Length: 306
Image 1 (cartoon, helix red, strand yellow):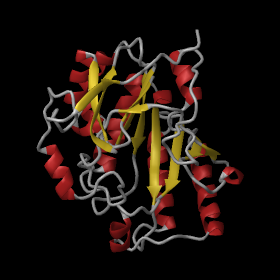
Image 2 (tube, helix red, strand yellow):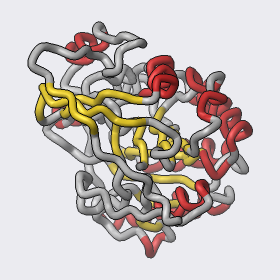
Image 3 (tube, rainbow, N blue to C red):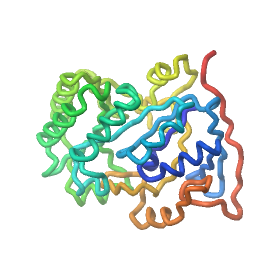
Image 4 (cartoon, rainbow, N blue to C red):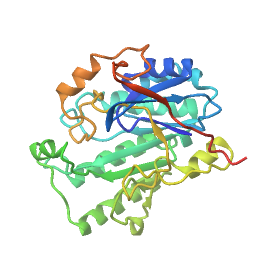
């Protein structure tokens, strides 16, 4: 089993203590986002969990406790962009805080296991292509030797973020201009010793030297684990997504990063309501078992090919 922690919320940043408690107790409850009263109990035994994939904009709250994961394999998808607090409201200052955190994490666990995400890329009057190229190059220079790979994507407009995208004046570039822009990103990444891939992009960026990426990456997991993994494409993700199957233990509408482009939160009010239910000892993230809930054991199995 591959554990995703989490596409739905920033667990390393805001819920590290809860996560370590779940590891200690050996199981977690996850409420089905499509069926409120259906709860899955998931075994977190190291014998079952081949690899943990963390998604975060700030892993600092987790870093002092990483010894608790000594029996697990894992890697980080670390988002580090050039946006200010007008776009990523609660993310600490990038140059002063987050770049040093990235470097420290890489020194602790290795450059292969910390993947830099410069995504999603959106364009406004402030965040022009020229702005992104400058920011990307500055960050790439600072991360040289601290990561082996960079992942990019262009912002997708959903019903949940459309209003925010309109409010900040986000606009789209035509394909020809995007290809030119992407080629420059590719050149910067490679000049700093990084492979570069795209995340769930419909556009083929391979002429720019940008491969279709798998964020939950079978090849990388096999390198980390040290054996073959028998896993197929994640059918719950978009067609363009190359990720292999995983189990996500996050909860929607609980991320406090406040990013304008976010699709995982309905509103600030829904986030605050859910966060008020946060209990570090609860098997559920930002919630409790209620009358009428049905708890069932999630069928899991090892993916290792012996």
